[in-house]
Length: 111
Length: 113
Image 1 (tube, rainbow over the protein chains, first blue to last red):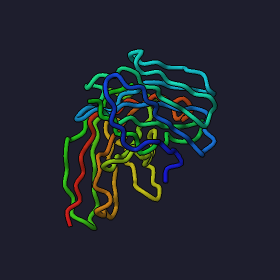
Image 2: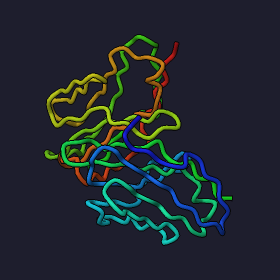
Image 3: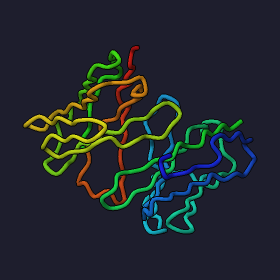
Image 4: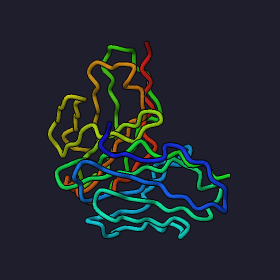
C-alpha cells in the first residue's frame, strides 16, 4: 500500500469511447502528478498540480484532460484516444520534505 | 537536470550485496542524486537520495564519489523481491514539493536464487 490509489487497474476502451482514470492520495500531500509509461520507454511527465492548480502541462494532446477538484483527488479524462496511447498511466503525489509517492497505475489498452 | 548513465541490466545472487552504479559526470553543485525502483506491474518506489555525503536507510546505502561524478546504490542482502528496474536520477534541490523527476531507462536488476 503506497497511500496513492488508482482505479481502475486495467481499462480497455475503443477509440470513440470516453473514460476517466481516478487517483486518490491519503498522504496529505499538496502536489499531484500524471505520468505515462509506454512499453520500452522511460516514464514521461504529463501534468502537475500544486494546491489544485495546474502548474505543468508537458505538451500533452487535448484528448487527455486532467481534473483536480481537491488536493486529494486527481482525474484523467480520456476522449477519442489512439492505439499508441496504450500505456501504463501512473499517478503520484508529493509535498515539501516528502519524496514522490506513486500509485500502481492503470494499464490502458486502446483498441 | 544532469543526465545519468546506468548499465541496462545486472544479476546478483540472493543474499549477496547488490551494487548498482550510476554515472552523472555533468552533475552540478546543487543537484541531488535520487534512486527509485520499479517492481513489475507497480509504480516506482523511492529508495534514497543524497547530495555529497554517503547515506543509509532501512532499504539501502548510497555511496557518492568525492568528485560527485558517480554513485553506487548498495542493497546489502539482496532478496528475490529486490528484482526490479532501478532508476538513478539527478535534480536540483531536495524540496520534494512540486517534483518533476526525469526518469531514464534504468538498470534491470535480477536476483538469482
